[in-house]
Length: 340
Image (cartoon, rainbow, N blue to C red):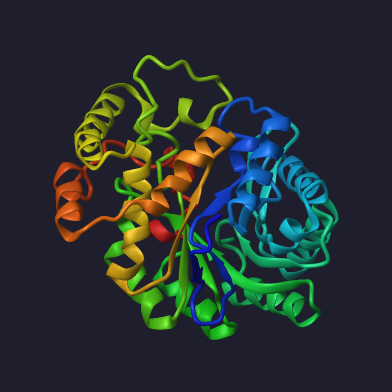
């Protein structure tokens, strides 16, 4: 059982050093096994993972209900240690399409009411809009979450995929615990301006995509067939020459991992874990394990020690901006305030 923890910013909760990202148990990465998903949540809690991350739009509520079932069927002591991070605001249609984001105060409270019911809890530990609603000032959205905090329905306010100006405006409105944003060896755009701003304001990071959706896990192959409803079938980094270029980076990383006696996934996660101390900011990787086997591998990253020489070798093998292709298709990139 791991007892290593991090505190999300100066106002946020103390959480496990690794969190479990649960999206893939319900959506976007092809079919998942429900029983194995619940068993994986239970195994994570048993191992000392306290932070479970979800979104109300993952499978249109499916993921929240899945987590709710996992919590109900977990031993009481494990259930009580769980901290829930929930994203809201993404608008879907019955075909699974995306229709924008809604950050209006009334909508914020409506989304929260449904999430509380599906999760089967009295409050949400960290609540955040998934993407900035361009039609609603962030002050209004954050202010609505602050109202939920005052009433006891939410404990902490988070942000997701927003840039420096939005971060500052949000932090001037209410205490912010953390920014959830993609951060990995091949997605390092936050280092130039966003990370220094978070450090200045005392805001932590929950990093998703630490294995770039499996691309740098060491388990993805060029000939892997992806279902049409798998996000990666349309992701620029998984297409044609981009994919081959990126897998070549993985092979360079594999050589270093083998010298350390660890897996590619473990060294990639360990690299993200090491960025907190390097940037003087709490950084908590979210691992998107859908099976107990992958969870166990990810947890092994906690035992990997990277010296400065190791970090230098890793970054020589996979330099910043080395990846080929954007991290999302162009239509989704347009929704990322963090990329503006």
